[in-house]
Image (tube, rainbow, N blue to C red; front, side):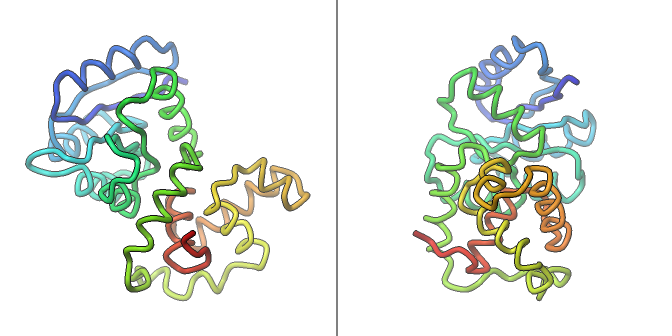
Length: 222
């Protein structure tokens, strides 16, 4: 199946460059571009892309607010944040807003395409070692525990011991295969555990699960 991508960036050269790179991939189609966050929200509504490449610093509405609106309005579109710096506080805020991962703007064509494929497939922890470092660094900045929605309050107590163990390993950046190897079970079993964790916590994907684990202090920074 072809992955439909929307590119949101206020710099025309960036949009055109990414369009050319992704357009050369046989399994990816760039269906549109957006010049700011507000435009991105509207274009997602019109075009129903699978993945949105979202710049953070844009006029009218920044990428964080746009991500929040897109995630709230459309459960299908995944947001992949674009940033210049891998330890950008705004990226952490975007992850909390519902982004499925992030990618550096100087990524190669292969990294860009692979990132889109990973997010589209629901394997949201793109570049686990870097993403984990970012989550760790900025969870240190939070002086108070995460204020969870009412639907989630007390929810992690509903997780089984094995589900909690899987959640912690997700936050450590392990893939399903690596978790299965660590726990000596089938990978299909881990996929089932991950699905149940997301449902019980009311979370969107693995990235949100990792953020939750850090902010619920199931995993300590550092």
